Every structure is written in structure tokens, then in C-alpha cells.
Image (tube, rainbow, N blue to C red; front, side, top):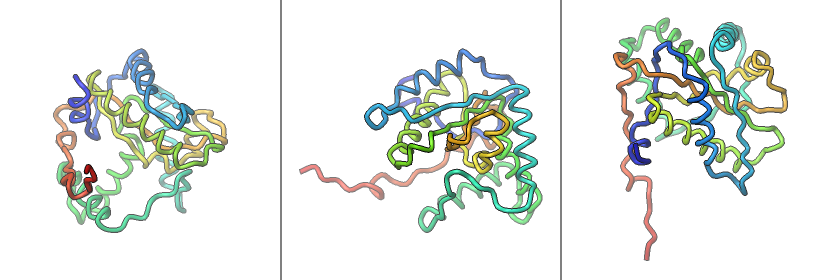
Length: 221
């Protein structure tokens, strides 16, 4: 699989087989992904790779945290989307609900699906991406995005799928406590990773992209 094929093959997977990913495969993906560029080679990313009983315990803790009153306190504030970004987000939500057979007015099933996201879509493994709090530059955040894309693009080469997620990262204190990560490490995002369930309709979604010329101006002469 060449680079173009890998980028085309990447999609968000929201249903996984239970088979755990071998540690050597996860290690190889991360070692390759760490070739991603970063500001003057600072490499600000740090990973916590989770599976087995530890992931089960984390799932239970995240489920409990999501049921508590009050607003979550993520280390990175959630964005406030305006148009046209809000419309794109809504379109994705509607498409996913249709694939899952969830009616718009079925608030309970929508809530349960949201909880599935907090639980990392029951993936057999997860990668949590952290960054030291001393790195307060937006440039370092860009670097973590680059390594995240590298992980997502590499996964299909090994028959794996990923979903890059904010939902579990809404509860950074829970994740740090369960995984023993120190407070000075900021939780950026979570990546659900595993072998995709091939018969699950939600995994067949290939979300649209805006036409390139709508987002590009050319200055070549």
C-alpha cells in the first residue's frame, strides 16, 4: 500500500472485532508514526497504549464519569463551531445515526450511542496522546496532529482501523488516574484502534470532502 492508497483507505471506524492487536504491531505503527515532522524536532507527543483488563477498567471509569452531573473538564476546550463547519458536523451526525438505524427523535438511543463513543467504540486497544503542559504553543499541538494522522494512515497497512476521538478525552482526570499518568501531562485525544467489524454498516461510511477549489487559492505566477 503506497502513501496515496493509505490516505484514501483511512476512515473513522466505529465498530471493532474483539481481537486484541499484538503489541509488536502497535509498536511498529508508533515507531513509524514518530517519523512525523515536528517543530525543530521537538517531538512533543507521548503515548499511553491500553488494552486488556486495564482498558476494561478505564472504560468502566469513563462510563461512570459521563453519568455524573456537571460539565466535563477536558484539557483542551471544545471548539464552538459556526457555519460552514457546523453544517459539516451535523451532516456527519445524521449519516452515522442513519447507518446505526437511530431515529432523530430517539433521544435514548442517541444517548447510548454517545456513551459508546466515550467507551472508545469497544475497540480492543486504545492510544491516548499526551503532551507536557510546559509546551503551551499551538505549534506543538499541530505536531501532535501530524503524528496522529501518521498513526491513522499506517493502520490499514496492518488490517487495522482507527477512530480519532475527543469524547474519552473529555475526562482527562479519569484517564490519568487509571493509567497512572502524572498531572503535568495534558491529554490531547484518544485513538480507538483495532480490527474493523466488516459487516457493521457504520464502518462503510466514507465521509465527503469539500471541493478543493472551494478551499484553495492558487498563487503560482
